Image (cartoon, rainbow, N blue to C red; front, side):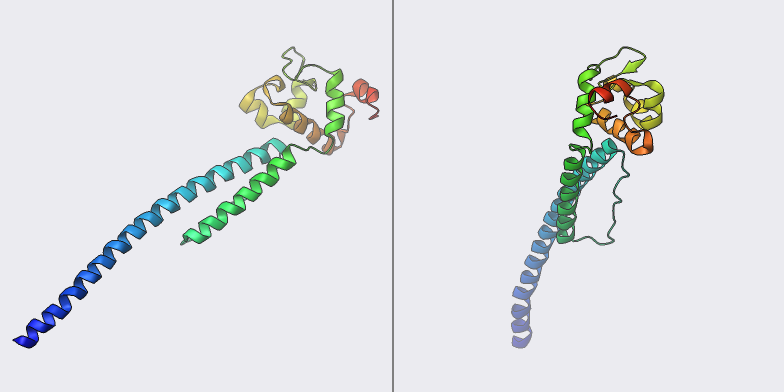
Length: 179
Protein backbone atom coordinates (compact mmCIF):
# COMPACT_ATOMS: atom_id res chain seq x y z
CA UNK A 1 0.00 0.00 0.00
CA UNK A 2 2.75 2.41 0.92
CA UNK A 3 4.36 1.80 -2.41
CA UNK A 4 1.13 2.53 -4.27
CA UNK A 5 0.52 5.72 -2.24
CA UNK A 6 4.10 6.85 -2.85
CA UNK A 7 3.73 6.12 -6.55
CA UNK A 8 0.47 8.08 -6.65
CA UNK A 9 2.05 11.08 -4.94
CA UNK A 10 4.99 10.83 -7.32
CA UNK A 11 2.70 10.74 -10.36
CA UNK A 12 0.35 13.52 -9.20
CA UNK A 13 2.84 16.41 -9.46
CA UNK A 14 3.99 15.11 -12.79
CA UNK A 15 0.47 15.06 -14.19
CA UNK A 16 -0.18 18.63 -12.96
CA UNK A 17 3.13 19.69 -14.51
CA UNK A 18 2.07 18.01 -17.73
CA UNK A 19 -1.27 19.79 -17.53
CA UNK A 20 0.49 23.14 -17.06
CA UNK A 21 2.70 22.44 -20.06
CA UNK A 22 -0.35 21.61 -22.17
CA UNK A 23 -2.08 24.85 -21.11
CA UNK A 24 1.07 26.85 -21.86
CA UNK A 25 1.43 25.08 -25.20
CA UNK A 26 -2.20 25.89 -26.02
CA UNK A 27 -1.67 29.58 -25.21
CA UNK A 28 1.47 29.67 -27.34
CA UNK A 29 -0.39 28.08 -30.23
CA UNK A 30 -3.16 30.70 -29.88
CA UNK A 31 -0.57 33.50 -29.81
CA UNK A 32 1.18 31.94 -32.82
CA UNK A 33 -2.12 31.75 -34.70
CA UNK A 34 -2.91 35.40 -33.93
CA UNK A 35 0.60 36.52 -34.87
CA UNK A 36 0.45 34.42 -38.02
CA UNK A 37 -2.90 35.95 -38.99
CA UNK A 38 -1.51 39.48 -38.44
CA UNK A 39 1.50 38.67 -40.60
CA UNK A 40 -0.74 37.29 -43.35
CA UNK A 41 -2.80 40.50 -43.32
CA UNK A 42 0.34 42.62 -43.60
CA UNK A 43 1.69 40.41 -46.40
CA UNK A 44 -1.60 40.83 -48.27
CA UNK A 45 -1.45 44.62 -47.89
CA UNK A 46 2.13 44.79 -49.19
CA UNK A 47 1.29 42.45 -52.08
CA UNK A 48 -1.71 44.58 -53.10
CA UNK A 49 0.38 47.77 -52.97
CA UNK A 50 3.12 46.13 -55.04
CA UNK A 51 0.58 44.99 -57.60
CA UNK A 52 -0.97 48.49 -57.69
CA UNK A 53 2.36 50.07 -58.64
CA UNK A 54 3.00 47.33 -61.19
CA UNK A 55 -0.42 48.02 -62.73
CA UNK A 56 0.38 51.75 -62.93
CA UNK A 57 3.53 50.87 -64.87
CA UNK A 58 1.68 48.35 -67.05
CA UNK A 59 3.79 45.46 -65.80
CA UNK A 60 2.61 41.96 -64.88
CA UNK A 61 2.02 41.13 -61.22
CA UNK A 62 4.78 39.44 -59.29
CA UNK A 63 3.73 35.85 -58.65
CA UNK A 64 2.91 34.89 -55.11
CA UNK A 65 4.19 31.72 -53.53
CA UNK A 66 2.46 29.31 -51.21
CA UNK A 67 4.18 27.35 -48.49
CA UNK A 68 2.48 24.20 -47.24
CA UNK A 69 3.26 24.66 -43.53
CA UNK A 70 4.39 28.23 -42.95
CA UNK A 71 6.13 29.03 -39.70
CA UNK A 72 6.17 32.48 -38.15
CA UNK A 73 9.80 32.91 -39.22
CA UNK A 74 8.87 32.10 -42.82
CA UNK A 75 5.94 34.56 -42.74
CA UNK A 76 8.21 37.28 -41.35
CA UNK A 77 10.64 36.61 -44.20
CA UNK A 78 7.81 36.80 -46.76
CA UNK A 79 6.62 40.10 -45.22
CA UNK A 80 10.13 41.55 -45.58
CA UNK A 81 10.26 40.30 -49.17
CA UNK A 82 6.92 41.93 -50.14
CA UNK A 83 7.91 45.13 -48.33
CA UNK A 84 11.09 45.31 -50.43
CA UNK A 85 9.12 44.54 -53.59
CA UNK A 86 6.60 47.28 -52.81
CA UNK A 87 9.31 49.89 -52.17
CA UNK A 88 11.11 48.93 -55.38
CA UNK A 89 7.90 49.05 -57.46
CA UNK A 90 6.86 52.40 -55.95
CA UNK A 91 10.30 53.89 -56.62
CA UNK A 92 10.18 52.69 -60.22
CA UNK A 93 6.62 53.95 -60.74
CA UNK A 94 7.52 57.44 -59.53
CA UNK A 95 10.46 57.68 -61.95
CA UNK A 96 9.26 56.90 -65.50
CA UNK A 97 12.09 56.71 -68.06
CA UNK A 98 11.23 59.94 -69.96
CA UNK A 99 9.64 61.92 -67.12
CA UNK A 100 11.15 65.29 -68.03
CA UNK A 101 10.04 64.86 -71.65
CA UNK A 102 6.46 64.06 -70.61
CA UNK A 103 6.37 67.03 -68.23
CA UNK A 104 7.61 69.30 -71.03
CA UNK A 105 4.89 67.99 -73.37
CA UNK A 106 2.33 68.48 -70.61
CA UNK A 107 3.41 72.11 -70.21
CA UNK A 108 2.16 72.81 -73.74
CA UNK A 109 -0.92 70.57 -73.55
CA UNK A 110 -3.96 70.71 -71.24
CA UNK A 111 -4.61 70.30 -67.54
CA UNK A 112 -4.21 66.82 -66.02
CA UNK A 113 -7.98 66.86 -65.47
CA UNK A 114 -9.01 68.33 -68.86
CA UNK A 115 -12.35 66.63 -69.70
CA UNK A 116 -12.94 68.32 -73.09
CA UNK A 117 -13.31 65.90 -76.01
CA UNK A 118 -11.77 64.77 -78.28
CA UNK A 119 -8.55 64.92 -76.21
CA UNK A 120 -8.42 64.15 -72.50
CA UNK A 121 -5.98 64.68 -69.65
CA UNK A 122 -2.65 66.40 -69.32
CA UNK A 123 -1.12 64.76 -72.37
CA UNK A 124 -4.25 65.25 -74.51
CA UNK A 125 -4.85 61.60 -75.40
CA UNK A 126 -7.76 60.72 -77.67
CA UNK A 127 -10.07 57.83 -76.87
CA UNK A 128 -8.49 55.49 -79.44
CA UNK A 129 -5.05 56.09 -77.95
CA UNK A 130 -6.41 55.42 -74.45
CA UNK A 131 -8.14 52.21 -75.52
CA UNK A 132 -5.00 50.98 -77.26
CA UNK A 133 -2.47 51.64 -74.49
CA UNK A 134 -4.61 51.53 -71.34
CA UNK A 135 -7.77 49.47 -71.89
CA UNK A 136 -7.87 48.42 -68.22
CA UNK A 137 -7.73 52.05 -67.03
CA UNK A 138 -10.46 53.11 -69.47
CA UNK A 139 -12.61 50.24 -68.25
CA UNK A 140 -11.92 50.87 -64.55
CA UNK A 141 -11.68 54.68 -64.33
CA UNK A 142 -12.98 56.13 -67.59
CA UNK A 143 -11.12 58.66 -69.74
CA UNK A 144 -7.63 60.05 -69.02
CA UNK A 145 -8.93 63.14 -67.22
CA UNK A 146 -9.90 60.81 -64.34
CA UNK A 147 -6.47 59.16 -64.12
CA UNK A 148 -3.63 60.33 -61.92
CA UNK A 149 -0.82 62.25 -63.69
CA UNK A 150 1.48 59.30 -63.05
CA UNK A 151 -0.95 56.91 -64.77
CA UNK A 152 -1.20 59.26 -67.76
CA UNK A 153 2.58 59.46 -68.04
CA UNK A 154 2.96 55.67 -67.87
CA UNK A 155 0.35 55.20 -70.60
CA UNK A 156 2.28 57.65 -72.79
CA UNK A 157 5.47 55.78 -71.92
CA UNK A 158 3.86 52.51 -73.08
CA UNK A 159 3.06 54.16 -76.42
CA UNK A 160 6.64 55.45 -76.64
CA UNK A 161 8.09 52.01 -75.91
CA UNK A 162 5.80 50.37 -78.47
CA UNK A 163 7.64 52.31 -81.18
CA UNK A 164 5.47 55.41 -81.54
CA UNK A 165 7.99 57.63 -79.82
CA UNK A 166 6.86 61.22 -79.26
CA UNK A 167 5.07 61.39 -82.63
CA UNK A 168 1.54 61.39 -81.17
CA UNK A 169 2.48 64.89 -79.89
CA UNK A 170 4.20 66.32 -83.03
CA UNK A 171 4.04 70.05 -82.26
CA UNK A 172 4.69 69.99 -78.54
CA UNK A 173 7.46 67.37 -78.95
CA UNK A 174 9.14 69.78 -81.42
CA UNK A 175 8.79 72.66 -78.93
CA UNK A 176 10.49 70.45 -76.34
CA UNK A 177 13.25 69.42 -78.75
CA UNK A 178 12.20 65.78 -78.78
CA UNK A 179 11.66 65.48 -82.56
